[in-house]
Amino acid sequence: MNVRYDIKCKVCNYVFITKVQLGYVEKANIRLGCPKCKSLIKGTIYQNAPDYSVSFENAEYGHVSAEANAEIFSLSTELPILKQTANAKNNFGFSLSPFIALTGIIPLNIFRDRYLEFRNYREKYLMSLETLIELTHNKKWDYVFSEAKNNFFPELSNNLIKNKELSFHLVSQIIRGFINKAIPTNYEHSYTIRFLYKATLTNIQKDKVVLDRLDTELNTYINVDREFVIALKICLNFIINLESYLPVIGLSYGKGFDAVFNDEFLITTFSFEELRDIYKDSFELLARASIVYIGFSNYLRNNDPNNFSDISSLSNLTEFYNMNNGNKKDIISKVPLLQKYFRSLLDSQIRNSIGHNKTEYYIVEQLIKYYPYTDLKKKDIFKEKSLVDFAYLTYLMNLCVTDLVSFIGKWNYRMGVN
Ligand SMILES: [Zn+2]
Image (tube, rainbow, N blue to C red):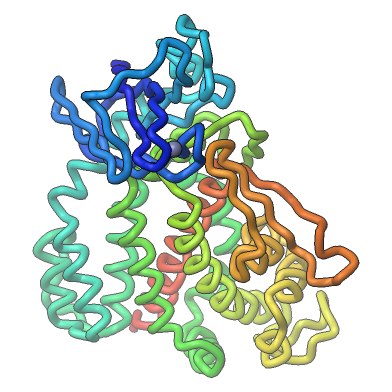
């Protein structure tokens, strides 16, 4: 169902028209730029079909009416929006149903059904998940066990040893269970996570001595347990705010995980600043954790976590640890399976520009311009990324954080097996 709203920007008093696509999401964020003064308008859509309401922090609606030739904005909390319809001046025929064109790209029924299943599951179990993460953070292994058994794994035997290793394993499986309900099944079956496992755990997962040795070695560089809890909290945030990601998740149903987007789509559910914070947290975690994957990978190839000899002249993990992220990425890219796993995710040009605010964001066009070079001669050279691309990248990073949770969970489980 599409409904029409006239909205008045409180900053410049301009009144424009929005066509809102309403579907199955009960509550979701709206973020759009005023076409005249370019300020960010923030709002929320609530829906309890057939009723719905919209509220905005810095715009009025309901008692205002737009001029006949006012600009039309398409809004959707579930689907990306084709860019050419975003300012469909005098083009009422097309703008009445700007979302129909997407049904050829996204299999809407599957996407909707999976989301609804996820939402029901989350409603039932979210509180238990939050409890489990707190208990894990506080190392209350007995309680982690009983909470997990009571809500998720009734078949667990009370005779199991209730330790860290078992707790990490259980919590990682529960996180994976939540996220797999929301995303396309082709991620579960995808080669990406298999590449990661093949490059790290697959051939040594039954060798407890080696796993313990890697545990000791790698914990000299990062505190793996602490990173696990950080990863759990990023996943929890993703689960709680999944509605904001629906437009990009929708795209991943239609185009697959290797999709490269042009600037065809807009999204209304994120502002750049919100996405940037999420991106930075995931990037930092994955960059830190890369030493774990590299240590495992070195061991698999050379029987020694410090031996890089077949890919680089580095002589130990400490040298890797001390590198900046750009150089770390070069090392990762020489490990064939890890390179395939990470692909473009650890783009330190994007990270450095965004982290140091060397970016300009154009709200109405949803375009990010970033200046990646520190060299004076190149300081004015910029690259561009659309917001939907950046949201997609952030979404993939969230999935990689989920993979990190699964990896650490599996590693611990194998260490704990007697
Ligand atoms: Zn305005």
